[in-house]
Length: 325
Image 1 (tube, rainbow, N blue to C red):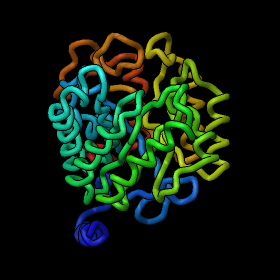
Image 2: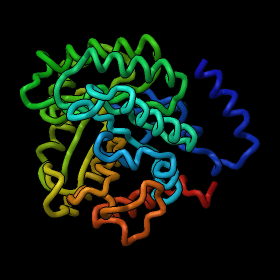
Image 3: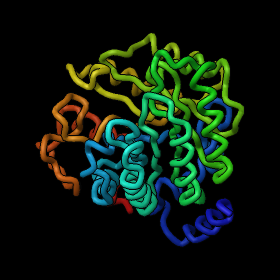
């Protein structure tokens, strides 16, 4: 059904200029081939965008207006809904947090963007995750916009073979039963850094990529070496979260290291989402305190990190600007 719908969409798009295509119209359903994520044409695709903050703490940005502004002004091709699980999140308020996820998903579909639906947790909660993702896949599985991130950041003590892989072996089939083709990004141990360990014992499913997270002030060549080892073993990677500062989210911006990571991701066709659209007083927050949930942010409402990342996105994703549509 999905392929039929996009074949029809492709025919309709012939009547409009190529620059009118949204990222999803252009790339369609994503899948994994070898150690690359490729688009509907079999070409490697590199998505670049922004992650929202924990949904229970920054709900003001889970809005259609924010998503449209990120598309039109920041020129993102990707947004990420960080659906909070603990600390007042989904485990306590499942309907409320699901509604926030759906607001972002609906806005991304309307905007023609890809959207990572992120189970933002550190501890394994397979039963709740299965319930959540079964709902999302049932409602949105026909849309190629959806990317499922099944566990944000397992901790160091969550061994791949002992905890993390069995968790994914429970959650992934629940998604696949409802969305056989959707791209799934599986979290890895040590705050999603042990991608080389996961690559050595991969999940037995099609269209699986592995989550790599980095914060430029803390994670340097050693982590890139682990990422390269995973790629060399045939794993596809997706940086669903990265920051310009230290792993705490604070401290100075390490722009030189950020640029090394940018080069590494571009060289290897690794898609990425920056952390985060938030007005929290910390280095990695893109917005100054009080910035509106309706977008329209001026330069002085962006932080140093926000300006750095926005400039990069506008350079690397020029085709998504509103002026060109």
